[in-house]
Length: 378
Image 1 (cartoon, rainbow, N blue to C red):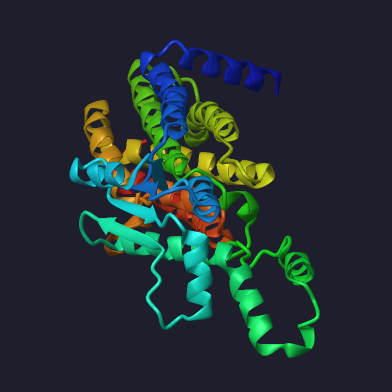
Image 2: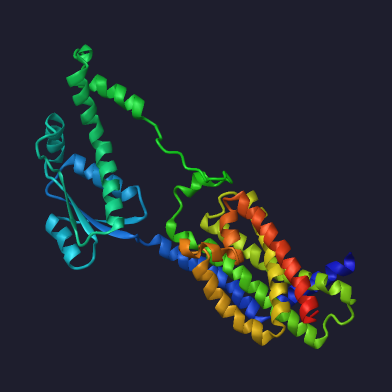
């Protein structure tokens, strides 16, 4: 055991003498820092300008809620409706939401007589799109949340005469007691793998990091595969009996992948994407084994460093496009199962993908063994 430990230490030390391995390791903090800087900036799928015709407490409350409750839409406060419209004409905003000067009064009049036209929000859009239509739903929900007390009082006064003796303040006290701390929605993953509580508030700009880190681990495994080809050429493991060489190769692969996976785990903790640490460790351990076997299999199938080097950039592009790193494209969903990052991305919240990753590892072992026999490669 002491000799094995010494070998593992030496194999680990020599990795940090290889420029390609250091570059792959450097990709991880560079990716996290780059995305972290971007995530701090104001950005979103849409940019919407908010403006008032005058000063109104209700309009200000609605605008503040819109500004605070989402990171998918970038809201910009404008000092006047004309400034908001100019942002659209200049291409700086996708839409403008302009609130009436006497919005509170108009809401009250609308409640008293819904048949009358009492518009209190004007929407100006550059064009029509699905994101803008979805944004309007968010506007409706936010406005209604602030208007619902008025609807409540109007309904009580018009339909519950038994409460005529109560003041508006007393009735609103009941309303506030009932509405306080009520959450209409509960977020959960389909398979209940955990982490759902924090996922609600996750910054969507950071979500591709998991997929990109998964791709980097695969790159590390392929780099380790190239190192092993060089070792075979110079006879580094020539004294090792042939029947033990697959174990040695697996050990070399695993050492490289574990180093990279450790950096990945630290990156996940730093960005807050590791919502369930024990789950993250389990997924990463199985992913490390799978990627080590993947590197071994690619090495045996390709045979030469030049072939592996040619496959590496092509495979990277394919994984970034096909796997659900940035988008989950339904038309490519069948192809996703051929690439390991798909399993890592989904296994964080899916027990099924955790199991499938284990099956994928068994398939890799079978392909590795059969390719050795059919191609005559060790």
